Length: 145
Image (tube, rainbow, N blue to C red; front, side, top):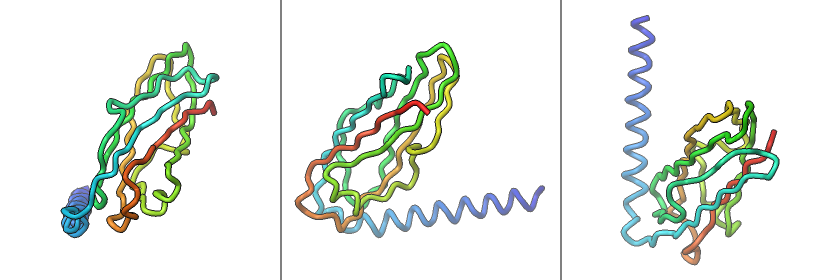
């Protein structure tokens, strides 16, 4: 038992070091990079009684920074429901420079009647992103499973 705890703590320290070092190296060029203005769009298919939203409708993301976007999903129905969220990015060229480090998209999300969950999209936009991408849209649509 003690060995597992030490092992888990060691892994946590390693993960934190990797994140800190990656932030340091990726952020070195951020002084010369302009932020990308991101519009966040959420919607739900008519067959799924979910409420799906984010606190912010727009945000600015600096290439090279790890960004977390939180979403709230609530089952407004009277029974347990399962949905899947699809993910789209516009302009499509931005996809080549975007890494989703954590995403709830394309995975089944089951919510009991009245249940609310918080989901996160954690992403990184490569600092080598094309200079002409100044605005983008991230769109999620929840579908009934």
